[in-house]
Image (tube, rainbow, N blue to C red; front, side, top):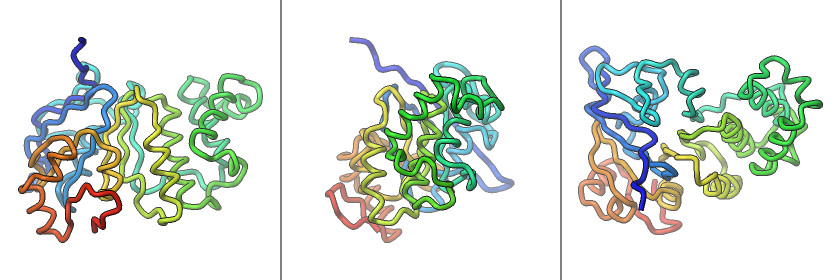
Length: 262
């Protein structure tokens, strides 16, 4: 039996802003095909850690390897090219483009066609087919010709994940995918996230414990910039330290489907 391959490895990451240590010697290993969640109370350092992994910030010390390659000092766009892609908490989309145009642009750029995406939209069969595939996979076919600015918020989040997947990531960082999505639009989003390709290794950053516990096979808990513990969902749900941290912040950790997680 082959050992599980580690696709993303962060070792001893420290991030200091002046006298404040925002990330305190954090190590995290993401296995191939992972469904791994990063959780913790507000101010735990989750966003700082993700900014380090994606190259937005350079660590004070520590290292990051992507499929064995040291990417610690690479720029964000270089990491994307190597297969690490992130979605953002705050929707970053072109308001005047349609989902079809947005995906055609992304797929074309990823395939090295650059500014020729307008031509590719009609004439490049592989690009057109990939766009159609993504529109269907992310339930966007019915709105593909509408300007993004008029889309329901849940559809905008789906488009954002579709854009990330159009970059053909090997590692996908899902940054609070259901943040701000109304209850009525969440189910479609949750089902789509659950159905993401098995070969894509996913690190989920999320406050919604229903999503975390239904999605994650492994979880890392951050508190005050450091790793408190790591384990499978059952271990995390029953960990007294984790319960104390969440109860102390008015948030209960409960793996019961439909439980109110604050």
